[in-house]
Picture (cartoon, rainbow, N blue to C red):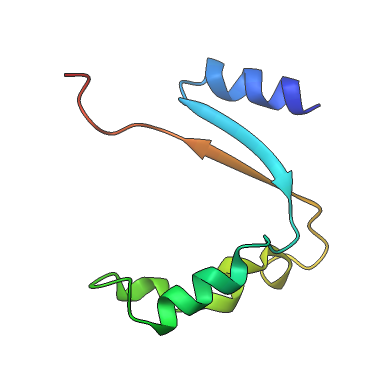
Length: 77
């Protein structure tokens, strides 16, 4: 199923498509420390709901996977 989702995303024009588990990543603590140390500069929105940013199941309780799509908005040159 992952291959079919990825293929369809590419057909729709996305530059990349990845699928991962909905569990918090091992790096979650590093991200929260990074925020606590104010390393995010003027990107204050990163602090809002930080706990949800590292645990997708707090957003959608029974989620098992997360599909991430990428689209470049920069110029080709």
